[in-house]
Image (cartoon, rainbow, N blue to C red):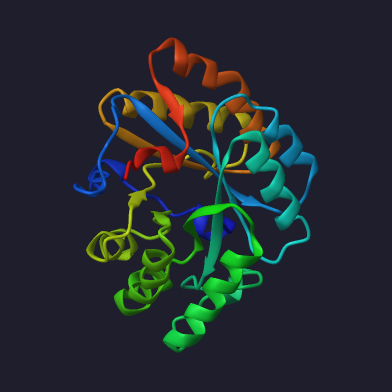
Length: 251
């Protein structure tokens, strides 16, 4: 996610709670559990290697078409992490945001969107779900999101709405389409720096005490990884379990 979109301010308490689908999408003992997704994986190996040394069950979201996308997916899978596709989607200000390869744009025809998404999914092994990279414009378009959810429904994959805009329709569209879905509650590293990441992880812990499922998104950056290494042991001590995103859903 770009600095521009990272600087968006959200009142997370006003966003709707995660409402996993009822039958056949059942919950399995999910009191006080959190999902932590690490975005922008595939750009380098140094930080990713540090991330893989964390003992907790995290979920990594991998950008398509990057130099290390494939190898990062393989390593994460072998380490027991969930692997997601971090699907680039059109932001509101495309001029100030580098979307990267494999992006989806509002102007595209449905067949083109399907083709790009399927190619991205096929090129990253072990993918179980998708979340949006950027997408502050694309996720507001219900018709476009319907195309995305059609593919995910057919492939039996889940979707996590990163909520890069308060106007996102992606989460609601996923639920309407019968796609297993969650949404982001907290960004760990909207601002750079270790202290901010620690603060956000403490906020995540507080949120987890009040909710069944809490979802946080961070990025593959040294300060974030250091904060996770130091703070996540506190979650276990406080009776909060870190789980992979796919563990929410029981067929």
